Amino acid sequence: MNKNTTICNENTFSKVYNEHSQAIWRFIFFKCGDKAQAEDLVQDAFVKLWQNCAKVPVDKAKSFLYTITNNAFLNEVAHKKVVLKHAKNKPNSIENQSPQFLMEEKQFQKKLQDAIARLSEAQRTAFLLNRIEGKKYKEIAEILDISVKAVEKRMSLALKTLREEIGSI
Image 1 (cartoon, helix red, strand yellow):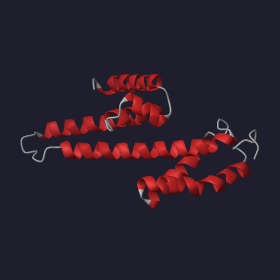
Image 2 (image 1 turned 30 degrees about the vertical axis):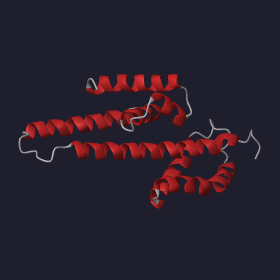
Image 3 (image 1 turned 90 degrees about the horizontal axis):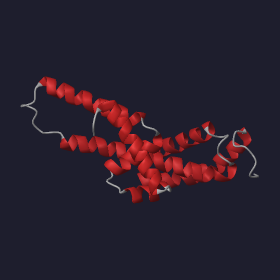
Image 4 (image 1 turned 90 degrees about the vertical axis):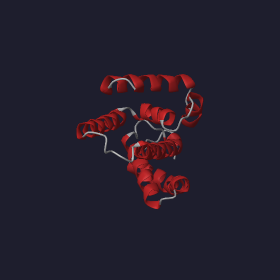
């Protein structure tokens, strides 16, 4: 395939799929250890590649697929950590909490999860890596292969959006 060939061509897309799908599947399977999850992540990455076929040159398709798959996996891990952290922090005894308090807490959690889900993928990834994983901006920059300034911008926009939607965080 030459560099100028568009991935939007079905034959080219099929060639990219045939060349890279198994290696990407193995890469993500080794990270997650779940065959079904790995298949879903790879399938989603190829869907995103097709949706962005005009923007991704053929010679960048492989790195695009690895990046998308890895980021999707990190997002899933971060989401699971949020759920586990919330479950762990939830008090064992709710006897002293009124039904109204419990309902408001549940509504707030839903509002927070929805607000995080509405962030752009870039903002959400940076936010979750920082606030859930506890990563420093420099570490996030290395993971995402971007500058520290880009991480700062993503975090600033994510926090601004979340503040507007649910109040101060």
